[in-house]
Length: 142
Image 1 (cartoon, helix red, strand yellow):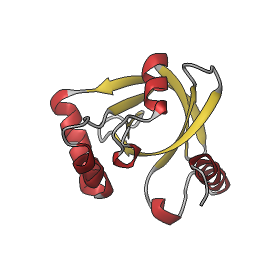
Image 2 (cartoon, rainbow, N blue to C red):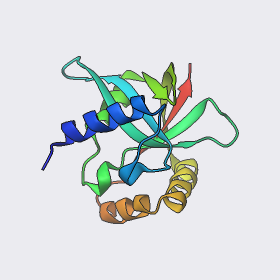
Image 3 (cartoon, rainbow, N blue to C red):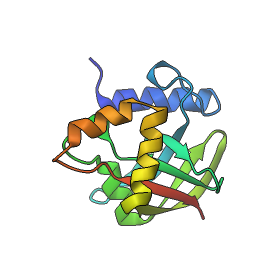
């Protein structure tokens, strides 16, 4: 069985080879590569993520710290929140973004829409009930 690092490396390579599109479990889903810096190590990292585009603002997308329903948030979430900025590859374009956490009713609305479009996210939320609320981050072109 391959490691999560190998999995990400393969997804990143496929994303770049196909102008931002990947197959397998992500077939047809909007994907983005998020470049961020490790808050402890200072290393440059790249994490592939599904996203939800903002319907009114084409320069804003939302990413979800689901970690497939694990009881803890992914490390990338803490890296992004700590830095407050990142760079993304979206399709064939690469640009800087400002990172903001979405909370309250807005977070609920955005997560519900992602779960409606991609039911796996509803399953992730079920796994985390009583443990954590899956964070939603807005990435806005800066």
